[in-house]
Each structure stands twice: as C-alpha cells, then as structure tokens.
Length: 205
Image (cartoon, rainbow, N blue to C red; front, top):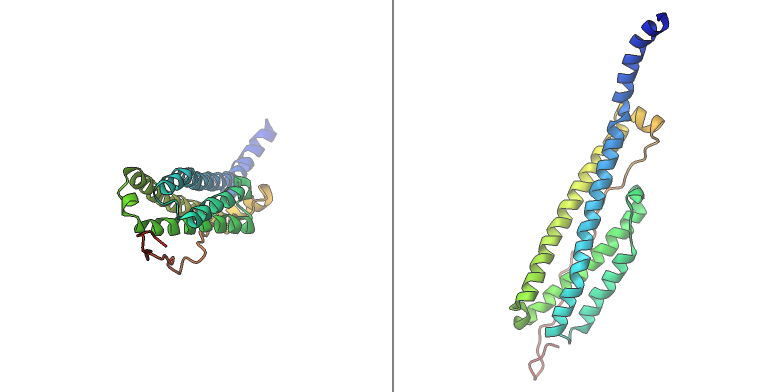
C-alpha cells in the first residue's frame, strides 16, 4: 500500500510527460501522411484508367497521330512501373522517380490534347468531351491530393524536430522524416510544338 501511494504520484506526471513527447501524436501524424499518400496514388491511378479510352477515342478520329498516341501509351506504361508504397515515402529518390514518371505522362497527355485542336470533329464528339472533362477533374484531384499530402508531411516532419515531441519520436518510435512530393513535368516551361499545317488533301501533317 505504501509503495502504491508513493508510486502513483510519480507515475502520473511521467505518463503525461511521455504523452507530450510524441508517443501518440507522432504516430498519428505519420498515419495521416501515409493515408494522404494513398489519396495521391488513387488520383494518379484514376488518370491512368482514363487514358486507354481517351487514346481509343482519338484513334477513331485521328489515327494519323500515331506518334503522339504511342507516346502517351509508352508514358503510361513507364509511369505504371514506378510505384511507391506508403512505407517508401521517406525515400526522396524514389519520390523523385515517381514524380518524373508521372510528369512525363502529364506532358504526353498535354501534347495529345493540344494536337487534338486540329480536329474539330473530334472536339465536338460527346465521348471525347466527356473524357476530357473527366481528365481535367482528375488533374484537379491530383493537385489537391498532393497539396494535402505535403501539408501532412510538413506537420509530421515538424513534430520530429519540435521539443518535446522529438524525444518520443527518436527514442521510442525511431521515426524518420518523410519526403515531400514535388510534382515535376519535364519541359513544362516550353509549350508543346504542334504543326497544324494541312497537305493538299486537307489532312494534318
């Protein structure tokens, strides 16, 4: 009984101190960041799922744009091969490779959509208009998902460096910083060059 009376007053402040040292808040912040990364992946996957239908629709109206269509298909294939699990979000190099692959796919899609400006009959297609609208909505989802993920990562990384949470983060959890996601689009500073000239038969060159 005497030991319990002496121990309890000592344990209470200790437990409170440990709780304040990131025992609970750091894991919660980490799980939030990982969940936000899953949203980023889901948004990119939604875009990837739209591409086959978009390519087939364009091919039906403008099969001569084979080079552009092949470029989109190849970029999609490369992007699908670069995957990052929630466990790998602390690897900056893996994140860079993922961002570059997705950026290359985004550039290919941009070139495809700009090229399609030369085909009024395609632009007037209800199916193409619907796919284009879905693609635009997906790009917005991607931007929002990336923003939310980066905000969650900044919160988590800040906790790792802030006293007293840094104590629990390093001693108890062995927590490591996560990498921010920097979306990249190779050549984004240059507008795609599209030749809208027509040959004598009225076809796009």
